[in-house]
Amino acid sequence: MNPPLPSPALYPLRAMRPQRAAGLLEPAKLRTIEWPMQRTSTSRYSVAEFRPGWVPAPTPGKSAQPHAPAAGFTTRRSLVCTIVFIDLVGASMRPVDEQVEAKEAFKLLIGKALQDIPEESRLAIDTGDGAALCFIGPPTVPLEVARRLVLLLRAHRTPPMQTRIGLHLGDVRVVSDINNRANVLGDGINVAQRVMDFAQPDQLLASSTLRDAVCRIDPAAVHRFCYLGPFQDKHGRLHDIHLVLDEAPPVVAAQPAAASVPPPPAPRGVLRRRQAQPPITRDQLTQVADLLCREIGPLARVLVAREVDLGHSLESLVETLAVHIDSPTRRTQFRQAALRPSKAA
Image (cartoon, rainbow, N blue to C red):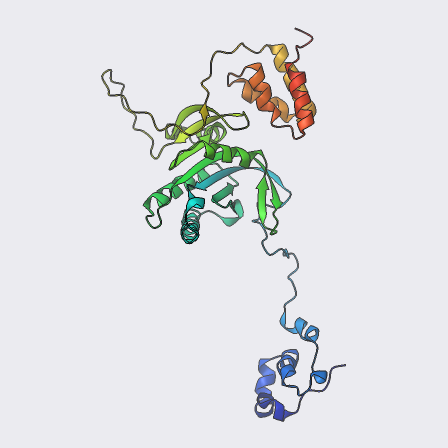
């Protein structure tokens, strides 16, 4: 049972203007104000008694998570999205004060690049020395965001910043990180980082998957990409890499005496030029597809059909497809079975 309210002498507001005080504040809030006015601690109220009067109850239907993800990026959901992976060149080599200054400027520039993109269709993830931006929707939008960010970074002088950017369209899984913020895992963001790793400072590179998707939506965009060839990452996986040009080159008639244009700077990484490989037989292709189907399901035949047109040998095809198997043991068994001569042979 609550003790009686204090005398008017202890609370002038209540004594002089009781009607106005009662009209402005609810009784529960008045009791809270009077609580510290009590002469002895034994006659004071419990804090728990006043909490319902001041702290609003959570609204039904709203998440109680402090960092709820955007509507399109619900946790534990698998989806296909476009990832823009950005690295600040040499950020960790600067003094701490310069790192903080560069990070704040970088955050403002990303905000400008994303200002007209709906929040429910994007997710920004801090990667320490940069950021990963994930987009749901047509890949032409993140491509334009990346080009816009490059222009903003080039115009920014204090502090000067150089970036390497990689773009890829792939599958990810939305999860919660240690701070209960939305994060993504999966092959999509891993490949985007590998594409970024091949870039030189101030270069914007894209995977063939993203380039093909953009060109199917906008055929004129084919002139905004320059094919650089296949590159091998540190895990031995090959990636077809395209340089995203600042502007589409003008279409001019071919001239025999035209001066040669120097090629763009080669990305970092080990470049493997494709050589003539023994053709893969139909029996070998069927065997690889059947074995992969046992591991990942019907999607296997789609992956095999996509990779077989890239001129792989049997060994490189098996190695490229093996990365889609999660279990290391099952992956090794797949490699051994797929390279074993087929019964038909």
